[in-house]
Length: 140
Image (cartoon, rainbow, N blue to C red; front, side):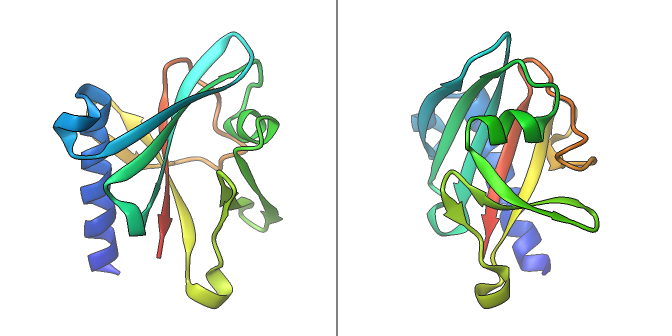
């Protein structure tokens, strides 16, 4: 578990560099896409453990008020309700298969002081904030 946490933190740090530098300078190749329509725009990085040198950055525009509503509205995430809230099982068409392979999606929010930190609220309770950045990381 500690090895996975270290790996995730390394990826998070690399993505933080992406936000401040070009993809070429950071070593992570980033594909950018704009999706959705609305007055509020925020960023969503999607990265897999198997392709740490690649990520997709979505610029999401929305009029929705929660992160879950905004991302399901543009079909970027899917999942199911669970006892603790909404369980994201699919991001960008990539389904995590926890039961068979142990894969799961981790969600991080960018904090100016700390970099990417684990999302502290349920995705359905997280308000959409203009110019915010989130990271969805597929742990394997």
